[in-house]
Length: 234
Image (cartoon, helix red, strand yellow):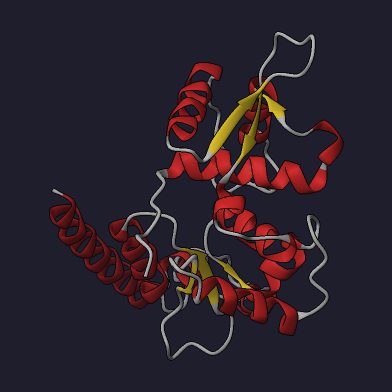
């Protein structure tokens, strides 16, 4: 099996932007440094939303260039260099696989429904069956490029993420999926549960002590696991 490819969070975002724009706006690709900055900082289709300076993005691009994952090109008569990504070429990815990988680089782990809808803005993914085929191909790639992040017992809302990151980062995301903090406890209650509490006295919300206790235990467990992972990195 080929050696794993590891990018930090900024490299992931920059590569995701370059892949995305190569598919959605091919007429303006490769991208200038400013276009890459705008793509990294845009508020839609990004998680988390960031606000990076030009020199920060330039440093990331330069590093990716030295590693062979990006190339700066100069058009005839142009003094402004433009950047293109080399990652998908090195991995022999095309079409739907490029779009799905870019989506995970830009927003992290997502459900199958989210991935299909969001990747389709770059390359049409007609249905969940087609998406599952793409994910299997990415998971079986050498090196592996994607994996199921939700625990095995989960049947609904299964989330997949990319593997182009450190093992500790992957494990932190898996822990978050296991504890449900990112998918359950932090979400607003649904409409019916809100309606059912409207008749309750405001100073005695139903099951609030139990809910707080569960949250505290989840936070403690997550902190412990993160500390263990940080020790692995050292």
